[in-house]
Length: 173
Image 1: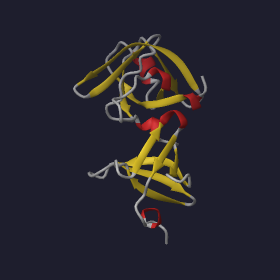
Image 2: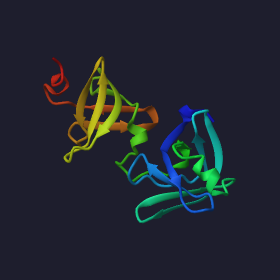
Image 3: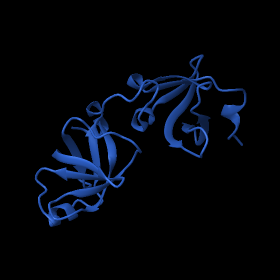
């Protein structure tokens, strides 16, 4: 499977116990375990497929047991590796909700079709989540709020916004 078809779950932090279980640092809070029973581990040389033996959350920490990783030494060798899953292996979130991976890389356009840029990240400053939209050489911060974000179409990687006057010019110098 190509890396472009995969979603980053997180990174392997360390081994856990002697049976080959590893502890993960998830990239997104609240992301469910993939339902496909397979993940891809990339130690830098490209993703390698592994069947998932178990996935559990213990004291708010996620742990993953991969088939074929049976010893402490094998698990230690995976420390620092990125863990991916196929996007199709995730169930749909609640209506009106989206996984971060569905929003990242989306084209942002205004209601009239004017291109704004591409979502390069999300900020959670304590109020509404802000879309970080790469626009030329700079970024524009767009509140992910109902009155501004009109439509999110994950299948097309497209977000339609209705920005208030001056929002898109705030960061221009």
